[in-house]
Image 1 (cartoon, protein in one colour):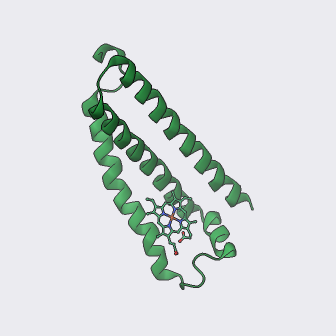
Image 2 (tube, helix red, strand yellow):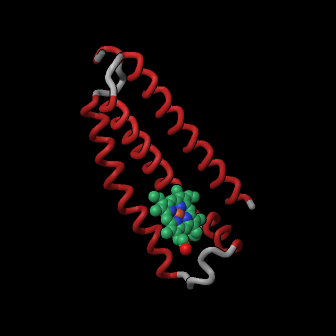
Amino acid sequence: MASRTILKESQIMKIHYITGIAAIFVVALHIMMRLVVPFEQSLEYDYIIANYKNIVYVLILEAILVLISVHGFNGIRIILLELRQSRAWENMVTVVTISAMIGLIAYGTRTIILANGL
Ligand code: HEM
């Protein structure tokens, strides 16, 4: 099996820990935006659109999107591989979780780009 895989499980686990820890920092920054914006304003349409035009904040949002997607879908992959072991199951789980991860990142990035252009 090892000869067929691109990444070793130990490398994937390193990615899992790094994305998990990095996500804590960027999500903390994201939620702390709440402290600098008045409550009534924070979810107003114009304010949300303005967020997407702030390039530094957009990069933080994109980082959250990528980190949470990679971490979350890899977490689901690990749980599913613990539940059942067979070559066919492992291949199916890998294809489904990587496709879902790519789909979510692509759709979220599309939203960020569209909102940035409004
Ligand atoms: C684990 C991931 C995330 C958590 C826990 C989270 C949590 C939150 C919270 C608590 C708020 C404040 C809501 C309020 O003011 O009442 C918020 C607002 C918002 N979130 Fe997220 N969020 C996450 C990921 C993302 C991602 C990936 C995006 C990407 C576009 C995003 C975009 C926004 C926007 C635009 C707002 C409103 C304005 C602002 O940035 O404060 N969030 N989020």
